[in-house]
Image (cartoon, rainbow, N blue to C red; front, top):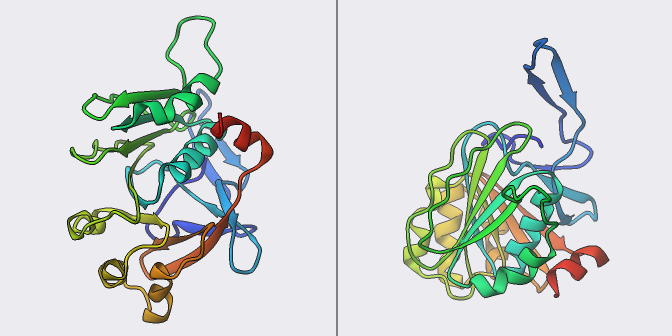
Length: 233
C-alpha cells in the first residue's frame, strides 16, 4: 500500500513510485512494487490510481452516493486494509458485511460496520493499514492515526454550505456532480484553475472528480463482475 502525501496524492499508472519500508528483525529495506487503489480510467483512458493510506494520518472527503463509498471500501479491503464504517444506514452495508469471509478463530474480521454514534478504535500498521469511513449526517470525524485514513462521505446532491466549511482539513476529495453553489468553494479551497473547476457541476453520470491542491482529474468509474456480485446482493 503506497502512501498518500499532499505533494503527490493522485497518480496515474505507470508513474506510481514504489514504496520503501525499513524495519523488521534485520532492519532490511523492503521495496514494494508500484501500486495503489484503482479508481477507473482518466480522460486519456489510462488507469487511474490513488494512494489512499500512508504512514502519515490523512483525511479524505467524499461527496457521492453510497455505492461509490462501498466500491472504495471493497477495493481497500482487497489491498489488505482493515476497514471500519460508521453509518446512519447500517442496513445498506449489510450485504457487504455478509459477503466477507468469516474467521475460523472468532477474531475480528477486516470489515466492521457500526451505528453512527459507535466508537472506532483501530490501529493501523504498514502491514495492515486502516481506513475509517464516516457515512453519517452528524457527528465528528474520528481522529486518524499512523497508517490510517479517515474518509467522510455525504451525498453530492444534498450537500449544504456547512458541509463545505471543513474542506481545508482534507488532503483529497472525491465527488460526483455538485450543485453550482459548491463549485467556487471547492475551487478556492484546493486552488483549482477555473476552467477545471467548472466541471464539478457538469460531470456526466458514471464519472467523478478527484481533487487535490491545484489538481482536478475526471475519472470514469467502472466495476468488475466480481465487484458487482459483492455490491449488488
